[in-house]
Image (cartoon, rainbow, N blue to C red; front, side, top):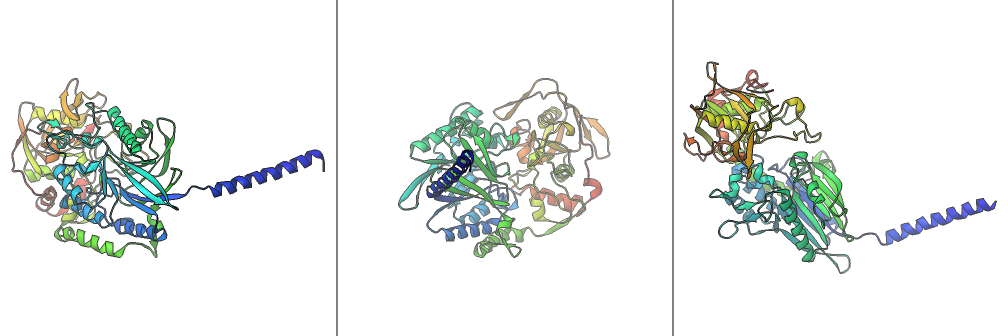
Length: 580
């Protein structure tokens, strides 16, 4: 063997030995498991779909049986109390009662937590047995004691692990400020002034105040002794949530080690982003409706492994493994409403949803048959000249086949009544200008490749009945918004034509000086929903009702469609809203 070959042989031997030594040392000092986390979010009152809450209970029980001495946190990241008829029927109490069966450790508020107004939210939080409720950026500046004082910015849990070891893990709650701007700003006001803020402390309602408030919470959590900080966020990762995405937050703060995210219904096993200091921070989210359950393993080196437990992972013999005792209790809770709303109302020849045939959500950007149905129902049942339905108020779908009261309840699972108002032509024109301020031609719309949601949409987009509207999307919007509320219109209008369509088919231009009757849900017309201040003080022509809004759809199908939703009427758009 030559000297060169001897050298090469010796070098390879030394290299292999070094690698083995490194592997041995690494295994001997491997990070030790401290705790585990199971997390859910955006369940939206879907209690038994996919994995279901009884399935979550079974997963929790299984993990605890495998490691009985290891701390297991069960956390919810918001939007559990709204989404289906079960939510509005019980004002969120069904969701609270079902989650109480699982004994959550920590929960935060989602944007839909405010849908039933603050008194109902306070009642729901007090009804909950969840140990900690967290939102760092929720601030009350109104008179008297904060009714949600039980919700704190952060909490610290001391976890015992190994042989006499301890770690203090901090959790900071964050929810999106868009809860105000995309919902009903009036819900956050008293006597015309904001008394609730989701930007944190500070006069400015902007992203900088928001980032600063979360940074202060992280700093306070660290100062109080947290060795690891986990952000629990209801922010999402969709582009249209900017500048309040979880990604935006990570880029603008330091001191966080992990983000458990929600809101955009994104299935995100793990995404790594750099924080303001350049440190890598993982982000994870599960999707929605318990299609996955998040599982996190915390190690003593302050790192975390993330995974999503899928329905397939907990399926045995073709069925999801569930805690049967929990499932029986869930069935008993929801069975109350199912029994009350089981009555058949009619049948539909067509399926109508918020989506087009490509799965793209159009309810807040364009005319769709579902929107026409909803607007027609308001118009005919109220006996008004005009029917209006805000795109943000359309949920679920009308399925082909039998329709029950429960099916129609799902179309508008929110608080509100059928409002009939007297409106001037000018107010109507202003409302439509506001409604179509973000409207564009379909070919110019950009849809997120995963969620299929448009990057620019408007919950105030109005579907119409008894009107024909033409929008010139090449004209920039003249609408001025102040503090999330409509302020004024200054400049050339993009709504270039609005005509009243009479029952005999005649089209008459709207006269700004004349008065008309219009009907729709109270949220969109008289409660300031989506920032609409234009018609909120219009004369109400009917009595405020405690009836759920779904009865509007029941009456329309039974009394005006005679129990049959026809495909000839609602299979395609009719050209009520034309966008050029």
